[in-house]
Length: 312
Image (tube, rainbow, N blue to C red):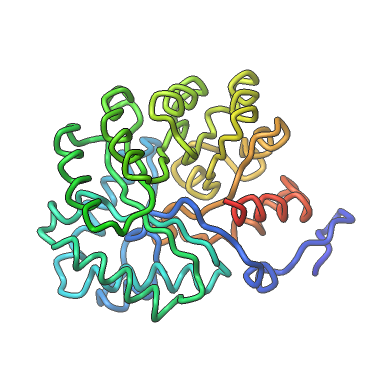
């Protein structure tokens, strides 16, 4: 433990935080790995992601320009998945809800069984102690009939345990995805979706209600409305928040100003997660430490948030 300068608050060192058991409940698998592992396999370094203030558009542009060519290499999918389990294992993660894009097989002409086999193999060989709960993730950018077809293709293997929905929040009305989530719920999958990453508090509530969500990815826009925060608290709806992602995408100016504190103070159940560690750089432990050093939370509060994830 070290004492934060100018305060009486003691905080663990990064090495000590890494030893704590944690949950990562918001992790886009192919973007969630150790960057050094992927770059070594690739034989080159990716350019550093820099946001121009266009949020998800900037992120998508980086992926298309820098990361998509990586998947032209034989073995790249396996290496990205291996890197994701290595990242989680090195960071004390014992519960991992990690998604793979449900349209990846179609876009890259990769058999779904190859993706599933890689997930199973690297879970077993790299991180067998992790409680791994694989998710199918879907982009809002595709027509609903295409997503329903992709969902049917991926879901028929009986391997995935949850569904997630992401990309630009206003690209389509949330009601368009109701059939997709009804199909997921009928299959017994946990239902999650991104909302309030850049959108309003009202968009968080609307998405949760229309899609009948079990958890919300990000959801930080809810901090702008006391009534929505009360609703989230009363519904016991968990927000799986990714502070570093929010800052790197310029949604939030600094860690000190992150609304996770406001949400926590209003009784909203929150967790801390990585989102895209390969792009944004921070694992869970680095984010815990930054929140502690900034005085956003004390260790007891961070520990409560950590336990929230493990109780998921």
